[in-house]
Amino acid sequence: MAVIAFTEAASGNRLGDRGIVTLTWTGLVNADSGTPVTHIAQFADRSIQVTGTFGAGGTVLIEGSLDGVTYATLTDQSDNNLSITSAKIETVLQLVKYIRPRVSAGDGTTSLTITLVAKGE
Image (cartoon, rainbow, N blue to C red; front, top):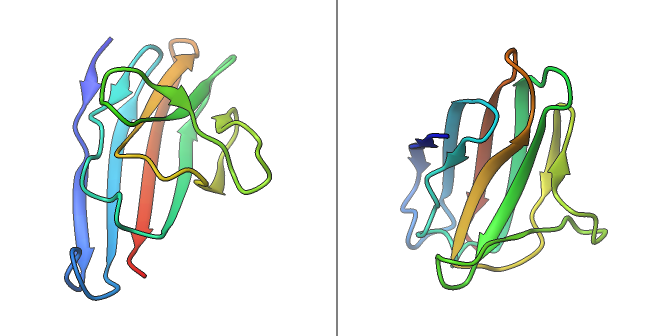
């Protein structure tokens, strides 16, 4: 179980001018989580893309927290849990201070990349 750091790329001023921030966690395997993101709460739009090899039972949860201690699975615009078992892109509905991916299941071939894109208002 490792905590995987994200890489970040920004276009525009991420704190001000409708810029876009892209955060990527790469190589997550079963029981890994991503370092929580704490600096995008002011961004109105957030989407998650999951790619890679899911393996048998591979599942990534997109989780959020208000306090950085207690995490819960976030939902998309249709109130479906962001419990992702195949490659896809989803919108993140909730406004939370902390967001992280966590791989909750998989086998020895599971290796996932999670990309979060956030856009200022």
